[in-house]
Image (tube, rainbow, N blue to C red; front, side, top):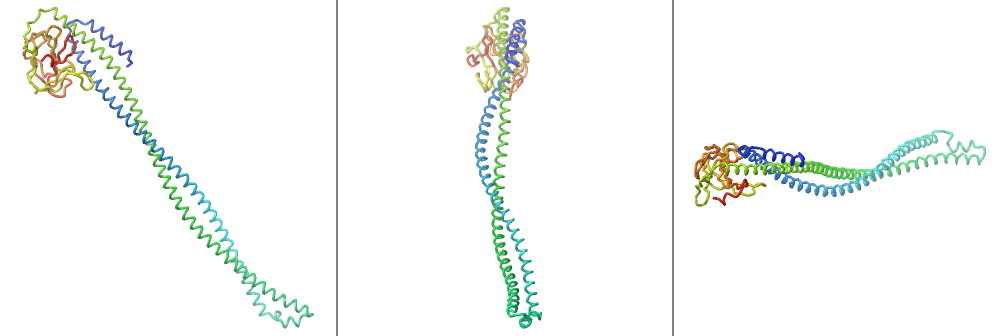
Length: 399
């Protein structure tokens, strides 16, 4: 409901009240209902304000945590980037060593085959030399056509045997060298693999740390967003309550004016009632303990005093006068209002039952009701008000 509509509604209520008959007892009932609603709304407003304060504090705390976590996330991300770079470097080195080891293995296998072939050839050659007649030096000498031819054949046979032995020896040396080189590569590869695994494990741990921090940050951001939405809704509700209270206050003021008019009309239409007041002016309406004084309470004006009594305690007129309200009146429960003339009236709320009627003349100390716990009440007590020209004043100034 907008502020403009509330004000218009309040003005309409004021005009409606002004057009009501002066003696209508429903005026008091409506005022009590309006004041009771104002009281409830004021409680909601106070709760909304407290809630706003709590939510604002919580949002500030969550924001601080998010900012702190952002620093942790940035630091963790930087460490993770460094570890990933080191890991990539070691992985490339390990890949290179694996490829080198494969090449060296292939070369060693090739040399092993070559050495086997050379050894077999040398063995065969030696067998042929020692088993063939054609290879005997004497036969070579006898079969030679000339001395030079003989020398050439002998040198040829020696060169072949020497070459076969040299080849077999060189292949064996190459095979041994490649094996040693491959063994060194294998050791280096194992060392680099261990280092790579260690760096990979540290990288994975750091990634998990970063992810946990980021997840916590996202959760806090979600909580902050939800709290901000709740704060916005609470603030909106509080503003709506305030607007509604403004309209109800206008209604209450109009009803108070109407009560004053009713009292004035009653005073001019009847003869003055002889005053039977005590030396203090007014008497206590019941014997009990004062538990709540007149004044501001729970964010609104408490317009009377509360006297704690047991259920069924007699409630008497504080001063002589004419009963103008007797019966149920909203938050007041069973209410009695006595007009004492001169613009002064007293009200007695939350009664269990009422023993007088509207228009009845009562004397000071006369039984008008029995206490109870009706209306907006949290326990048996007498709510006692003194009103001057419709406005509530501190009853202790009259007792």
